[in-house]
Length: 288
Picture 1 (cartoon, rainbow, N blue to C red):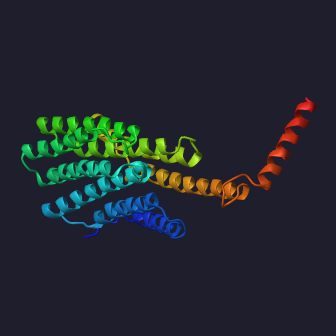
Picture 2: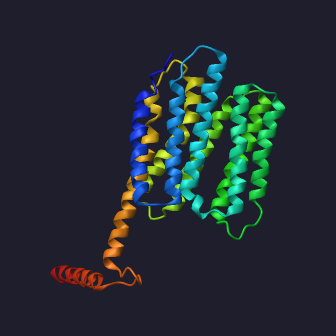
Picture 3: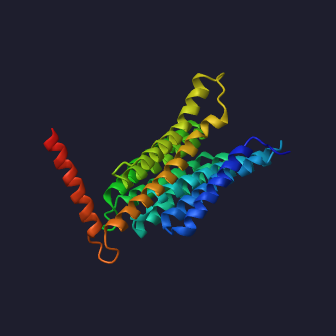
């Protein structure tokens, strides 16, 4: 049995991945590779949902794989947004945090003992403690974001395990991961271009999809919202990232046109442009 529900998202994501791959062929970059990898994980998240079936084992496999791909995509987006500024030591620490969330997700679908949930939360807590250590190569802002959100998530996961509500841990993990990606993207582009703002809005909206769906399920169980509505933030993020790349390319072309490519100093064309603008401004001021 095949579930055709995710098919439209698969087709859209396939086109999106091709666009990113086409850009990557012309513009190499570690962060761009991470964006491409993240969208491939999202594609796999939807692809595995095509598998239908009624057996418990198959439902467990589909659910666990889909959730793991969504978590890995969020981790890739975090790295794409701000990972280039991280030190090698901090990257290993962050990988420990990602590993702990993957374990927690796997434990949810395997229905293991409560102790193992505590162990996964403990690994995340240990990675947060390790991130607190001074690191001259690691920007303080990125470290603080990881420490604050990671510590909060570790406490929430342990609390949910204590209450026997581990299932809500999925939503807590996804909310934290995509909120962290949004905050990293916000810090990466302080000039607040249209593309960066769009991507940040999409990532934050994507993060809030998870707690919102839980709240609606608790307080409005009869309200049914189409999956396509919940998937809108994904495409807002994609549009924002592509707009950011376009704006960066435009700015780069303008800089090359007005500066010497060897020395980086302003050229004659920039001087003429500034003189023209100064003359026009002077004429307007005299007219007033």
